[in-house]
Length: 167
Image 1: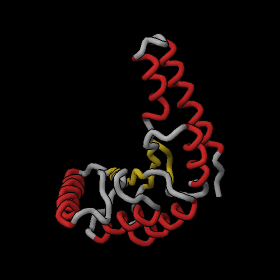
Image 2: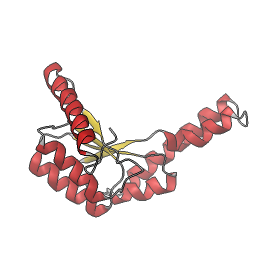
Image 3: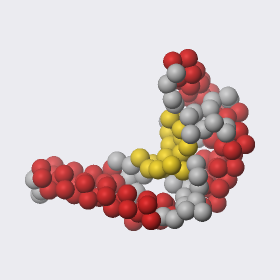
Image 4: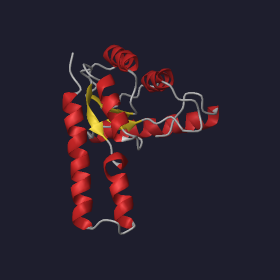
């Protein structure tokens, strides 16, 4: 969801109501909820604003099984881990989303999350396949080259995730 704690009051209430409906539907059906939160690019972005958004959802009684969040600083991950430990000890974890970041940026972002037990992995799409797909669409590479590039990009991200270090 594109959500900002400083969204216009009416918009924020509408979004919160819809998210609450989805959360309650998941609770009733036995499905897990992964809640992806993205602050709109047209508004200020910071770790503190993400922490406020997550705290707001908890204040509303929304407890997703999983969070999917953009990369935070090392301090931001620590603060988030403290919020989740205090508010939702049953949370299964957090996965990092990429927002089409350059691969080298994700490498640094992975390192910032090192040692955070709640950060379980990453779920990125455009970073590994974006450039390769654009080259394929322009007929600069063939199908086999497309597959090889995407594979190699994912393998590199996996290697960086594994080398990020642990506490």
